[in-house]
Amino acid sequence: MKRVLLFVVSVLAAALLTAPAASARTTFCLPESLRLLGTDGNDLCLGAPTPSITPPFTAFAEQNGTQNTWCLFTGPKYSGLVLRIPAFSGAGVFATFASGRPC
Image (cartoon, rainbow, N blue to C red; front, side):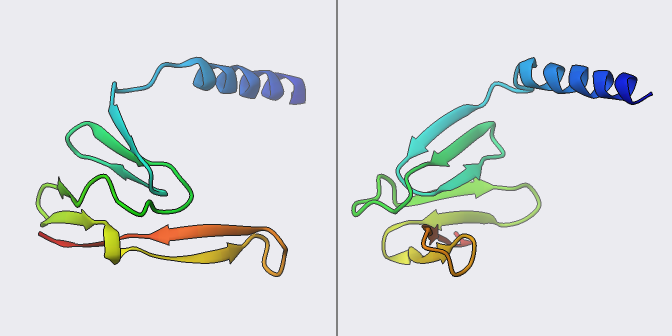
């Protein structure tokens, strides 16, 4: 029974790993540590560990249907801190946070 279950789990894992993406999204990569999933079929991938000095964009508006349109503002609106993972260890991770507000 355990071998059959292991085989089924292995087949499912292999199928998930080899399956193509459900939708063909467009990804724009910008140098910030954040990822925005747009409702219009586009992703905004912000991939560097720290924010850039001159952000490549000033605001990103996202319409989410029934709620308000939200804008992500970069630049002075950013704040960050160093997180220790695990706590009290020597390894630090710099986490950035961006502020959003209704447009």
